[in-house]
Structures are given as C-alpha cells and as structure tokens.
Picture 1 (cartoon, helix red, strand yellow):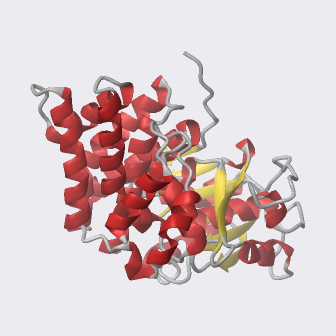
Picture 2: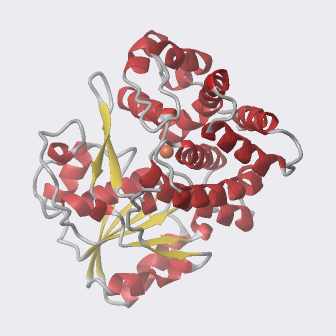
Picture 3: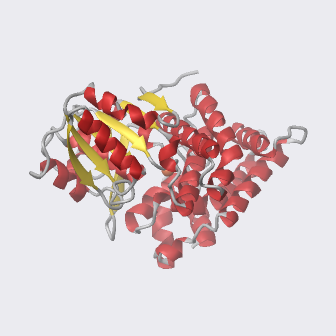
Length: 389
Ligand SMILES: [Fe+2]
C-alpha cells in the first residue's frame, strides 16, 4: 500500500456554524475581503447577519462579487486593481465558482502577476511558491467540494479556450465552514446539478486508479449520504437533514478528488467547459449515466472480477440496500439508478446550452481519461457525447 494524503482544512461543520465566522476572521486580523456571487447571498438575511457580526468585531471589510466561473481577467482585476485594501484574510461564501475565485485571489494577492502564468498547461511553466493570504471557504451549494481542495479552476471560454487549475498544496483553505443552513435557499435545479457533481466526484475517485483505502473509506461514507438524501434534497428543499447529508457528501468528495483524482466525466467537464459556457455540475450530471454505462461495459468485456467492477457492485449495494444478489446485478443496478436520476432531475442535454454537434470529435480527442479505470478510445468518447448532445 502506497499513497499520499494532502492536508485538509480545519473543518467547522453543522447547521448554525456560520455564526462563528467573525471570531474565526478575528484570528487572522482586522481586514477581510469577502468574495460572493452576484446577488443572491448579499440580498439575504444571512448576509445581514454576517455583516453585523463582522462589524461588531470591528473588522473592516471589502466586498468583491463575481459572476459566472472565474476567468483570468476576473482574478487579475481583483488582485492587481486599486479597489480593495490588502486583506489579512480572504473569505469566499458561495458556490464552487465563488470558492474557486476566492482561492485564486488569496493565492495571487502577493504575486502582482497575471494568474495565467501559473495555470497548468497554459502558463509559461512558472511555479507558484505557495505564499498566499489565508483563505476561509464557506460553500452555499453542496457540490464541487472546493472547500477541501488545493486547486482553483479558472476558465477562458471560447475557441482556443481552456479550463485549467491553479494548484498548490498550500492553496487548501485554512478553514472550511460548512453550514447546511446556507444551502437551504439553493434553487432546485442547482441542487440537482451540484448534487450530481458531488455524486460523480465520489464515484470517480472511488473507481480511480489512484484510490487508497483512506479515499475509499471517505468515498463510501459520502456515497451512503448521496443514496439516502440526494433525491430528498432536490424534492424537498427545506429538508435540513437531507441538506446536511448532501453538504457532508460534497465535503467528502472534495477530499477524495484531491487525493485520488477523477475520471472520464471530469475529463469531459474540462474539455467541454473550456469550449462552451455550460455549468460544470450540468456537464457532469448529464454525462454521468452514459459515461458509467460505457465504462462498466468495457470493464465487463475484459474481466468481470476486476477491482473496478467490484467497486461498482459495492456502490450498487449501497443504493439497493440489499446484498444477497451477485456483484454483476448490483454493478448494473447502479448504472440504471444513475440513468434514472438523470431522467428524474430532467437534466438538460449539452446542445440545450449551445454544444455544437460538429465539435464531438474535437472534444473527444481533447478529453483526458487520467485516473479512469479504462482508457477509452476516441470513438468510445464520441459515442458517449452522441447520447447526450
Ligand atoms: Fe466536479
């Protein structure tokens, strides 16, 4: 057995934990940069409470609001512009895009250089030394797990576009405050898309060629919560117990993806996400059923007793809640279950968001299967896309 396990943030988890934020900020200093989405949080009662708490502690604050997924221009404008005072700590409160933006801002503040130089596969090979402003991540969706990861995904969308990571072990947030109360207002559609993202991340890191006993334990723990609560969180947004399970599952998925890597669905999320403006969770959710169907069929053709087939079967047992059938039954059951969820959540097709059928071959050629248990060929990857265009 050999593996590395990255450091994780100090984790403050549970309903009501957001109330401790002013005290947590106070440990780092008296100047904070708050990073949020465009409007939903800053128009909510939660925001008023956060600002009252911070002001009560005599902490000065600036506010940077971001729209859409972080781009190099957005990060550069924040850290190299003149609008904000140098913070003692950066606090991002929002969905995955907001957390990634906050993470990148905390990483680039001291650099005064364009973030593009440091992006994997885009920059000029410059290595970041990890020096940054302390960073606190507070998710308001249950999905990407960015609160537990060491990378920020930055994208420039369009022809020649990219979706790449700014990554360093030191970029793991110092503290993650995961308060499921903050996810209760998350719209149904986003709950479904981000929930499927967390599900994909858990399953892909469980099946990953880099999985370890530690990531397996966390992936299974998260998958049990997905099985019990994903559908409930989507159908009954006020079910705090289901929201809490999903926040926990998303957190687990962040830790497992950071340590085991991901598979072909996230390969597509990267290749498609750089070319088309399609939300990350939607790409993952809409492709999850078909990608896993191809993957399992490919595995079964070669070796019905492989570790990956056994892991599919184990996942199926969690969702079926029985264990007296053979492994193949449960492996096939989980594929059908994922297809059912894609239908039930009415996940849009890629073309609904502007995906151009003519791009299938190009996208297939630029999709990575790193850490996937099968290295799919281009025709198989194209076949997956055909089914969800
Ligand atoms: Fe993801």
